[in-house]
Image 1 (cartoon, rainbow, N blue to C red):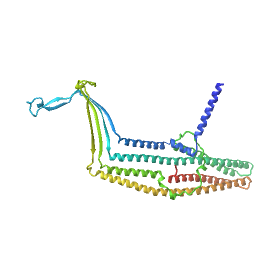
Image 2 (image 1 turned 60 degrees about the vertical axis):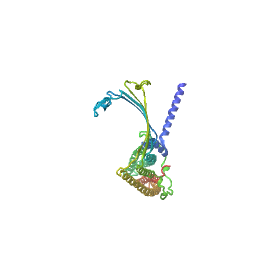
Image 3 (image 1 turned 30 degrees about the horizontal axis):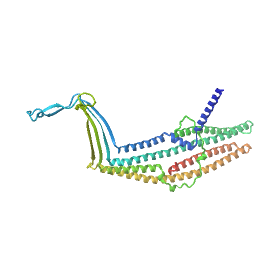
Length: 452
């Protein structure tokens, strides 16, 4: 009885895991986008760049905090240094220009202590803080731009795979329908009602349809592999797409391409941030004429001994630790550098002006791109509407032709022609659907509305 319960429990767990896996492998477009944001290597790298920029900002901030260092220096003089002093110090009768070689010091010398410094004023530090903050903002904007590109790529790849699947369904319907006509025509041929050429003509169309379906099957594999790559999904794992092509098609509203807000585009924001950095570089160079002031202090303990050891004996001068302490400040003031900084400032100004011109050019280009995307989007919708009507007409012609053929008042040539027209209309329709979706994505990307 216990074994049966264990078996039932295992089966429930296995069934639950299988269902969870199936659920995990099914993606709507939004789920595919969410998955790609969490798993795409390119997007993950952009997020890491953003974290790195934040760490860089904190590193620069740390330059303005107190800098404290500790040190211990131990010396063992294998040969005590020799000093030269006037010989008259030991012998009053010695010549004035005579020197005596004397070794001063002890064999062991140890110094332990710490020193601290504090930056009081530095123009580079002040501007560096501002630049680090803007650099972090630049990294955030770059992450947003990478996200926009990723959403566009995943969306296009997703609908490409969905459309190919829809195409397969219609091709299979056409194949089944034409297969029945081929079989009926073969039967008529065996009874002597139609010629063999009629059978062969239909078989050619049937074989072409089968070949096209096989090619489309391969395209589905390729389009799914591309989607998996864009998502950061394992290529060898299966994936199910739950959205249909109807999800990506909607009515074309007034797109308002003439009233776009270019500031919503990440590439525009990126240029704005870069321009701010160039402006800060000019400011940094100008403030470089100001002095730099640093305060510092040091506290050390020193001992000199003839024997190795670190103990303290107040009765022995050789076993004492002697204090050394100081405080001070350093002021560095640039006076003349051969006009190097002046010309560096001029170069930085030119870089800043070029960046401003690039922004103006992007504003014009963005408006042109939005207008172009608007027209492409509208044209794609018109084409889709036309192709949708064409596929309905081609289907109607095919149905009528099939009925006439079944009643013996039509020819198989009409069947082949109608089938070819229907297949062409279906192909044009699916191409128009994909063009419509791509045009919509491109328009949203051009106007900075692809992501919220």
